[in-house]
Amino acid sequence: MKLRKEEERYLRQVLNAYLTTPVAQKMKEFSQHGTTSTFDHCYAVCQTCLWINRRIRLHAKEKVMLRAAFLHDFYLYDWHDPDSSHRWHGFTHAELASDNAKRYFSLGESEREIIRCHMWPLNITRVPQSREAWLVCLADKICCVREFFQRKAGAYLCF
Ligand SMILES: [Fe+2]
Ligand SMILES: [Fe+2]
Image 1 (cartoon, rainbow, N blue to C red):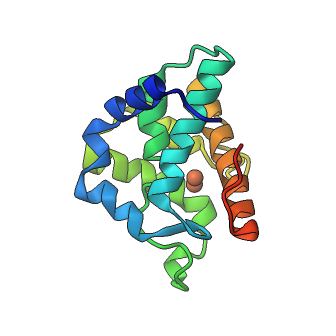
Image 2 (cartoon, rainbow, N blue to C red):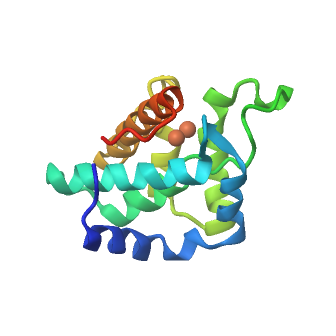
């Protein structure tokens, strides 16, 4: 699932307003799965959904999809911390990430809805409603599995 150089350039151009901001950079401080930071996980989800959209020609709205993909786990804490406020992390963080995306980047309703649905089927009532939402939801699962096995193998597994 490797993007071509021009696709990688396009991705960075779309995310240009977010990537270097201090609040987005803060995601580098939190571990997502194993040695992968939340920032790297979110960026990998962007690469994965763009790759699927381009290769299978699904014609999803890429800018909306990529903005939502980058901020889908923008909850800004380490869910491994044994803090009682994180106890229901799996069920609550999508809503929090959506709120943060609005608060810090004024993200629109289309993107926020994609973020809110990314934890389906765990959040069973939040079924993705658009092609873009399904792609982010799927790409997130692919990246989670890949990161899990990277941790197990201690090496990079190329999908
Ligand atoms: Fe998530
Ligand atoms: Fe995620």
